[in-house]
Length: 225
Image (tube, rainbow, N blue to C red):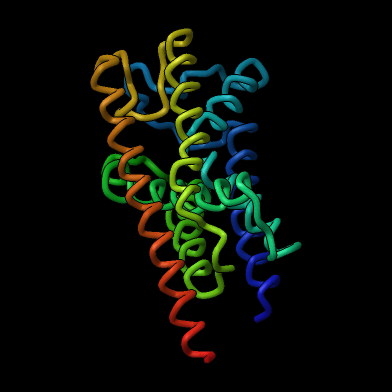
């Protein structure tokens, strides 16, 4: 399968997961679940709660990371040779953020997740399929040298902006997308420690991706010579 086709197919899967999830959100057809105190999800049914449901959905790190992956894979399908500080940062984000999404969901959130009906498909795409595809395709096809050492740090801009938005919005609505950022329950200090820990973990992942990229590039260059 050609390079652009692989990225186009993966991008289509990511876009499909996002679109299907948004359809479920707009029409409020998600199965009823128990909503923990101070968590997102307490919106009215029908038109009255439409804006709240959509904003809540877009406020999840899961959807942000899947959106970044969808955009990055779409751009790679259109043109693989890309560069620049902004692109390197976003490319690194597509790998690190989606990896964090998959790992945190599998290790922390999955045991308590209440998933039924069509949402099973959406959940599988966003938390398992897209994370796995993104990393595997990058390992096999690259393109190489698009994650730089500097992007380990510049890639923090988007996730830290998400964290700031989450905390500021939480002040006004007293609700948070995940238990580990629930200030009302844990307190601001504990939440900031969690955010710092995840940011540090993200930097470690970034260092791993950068190292693997350099290693694969060197091995392939030696094989050609």
